[in-house]
Length: 183
Image (tube, rainbow, N blue to C red; front, side):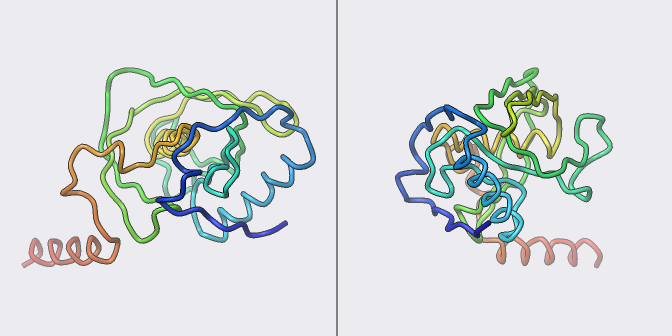
């Protein structure tokens, strides 16, 4: 396995629609998935799409750490998962703002509107179908990674650029607001 280089915003591979994976079980796809898992964990991140490692293919890996899941039945901790040739269906009209970052846009984050609930489907490297409904953080991660497969980066989904900034500055502002509230 290997740690892969991550493409950063501005590279054309991040702006193109990806091609379907012809053979999910092919040795080169299995190797790519293993390397992406290792890269995601090393970064550290909760998701990584193939175009982020310069491979314009319709696959991504993700996980939902226990500390990020909520009490909702469809927002549960998820182990490292691969979705090859996925589809994502937005369930309902309800949208919610949530903070997102991206390994391809280091040191920045923003509040991005996303569907509160989704249904997704894909296969793993053994051709086994993975189909789930997700909400909360789980749904957000899947939507974020799926967007990468269509050349969409999270700033393209933003509706209010007041909630976009460098992590360090946003953390400082949050700490100052909390200190003022306690005074």
